[in-house]
Image 1 (spheres, helix red, strand yellow):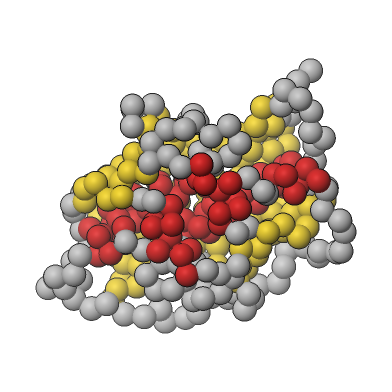
Image 2 (cartoon, rainbow, N blue to C red):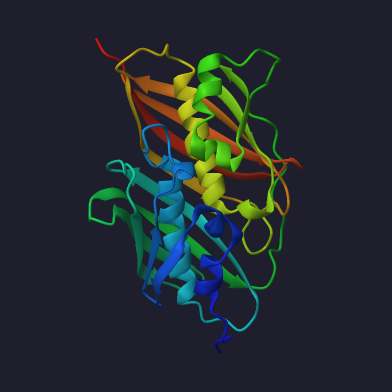
Length: 289
């Protein structure tokens, strides 16, 4: 028996979507389409849209697509279990469109594919998501976690300060308090406009934090030079638990490198010690010969 509640429209109206400027174009039981006009506050220097914004659009489009077909009588527990985002190109000062399509809708799990393009049709990112919807509250809380590495007091280099002062990172409120030899810790304090409808940090904000933290682990291993070219190749994120009205810290560390390609791991731990998400970030830094 359907609840009669429009879960898809409710997802599009969550505070984090409003902070980004997401608008809902279309949603039905099989597809969803969202738009995002360009604003400087979602960009890197040079008006390049931040990768965390792109992954957020991918995840939000998938979230709306999964929820728009939800047929459930009780208040549901809903969350993305896994999100994969592969970056194809950059959007520079351009409006973006995100679309998702349901591949299979099971009793609890919905598998989706999603894409982000510019309004002119240039491919920006593609990915997949697995979304879970069940009636009633979560039976168990998240697991308390120990930080994956110790953080000692040390001065943050000027390069790291510059990297985390760009428009979108500043708009989110990400703060760096450790950056050294392949490891970084970034904090994201809780704000109401970063939340989902349940008052927890939105999955899109967590994904953007993971994207940024993985890049910082790679950057901490290089010396900035003129002519460098950098980009995120892909991110994979698993969401384990919610943290209502809690800030989070992302611990990122580089565990492998193949010339200009850096493989980085990120664990996100809430202020109460619960591990809420983890992910891998493949980042590319091309240093001129």
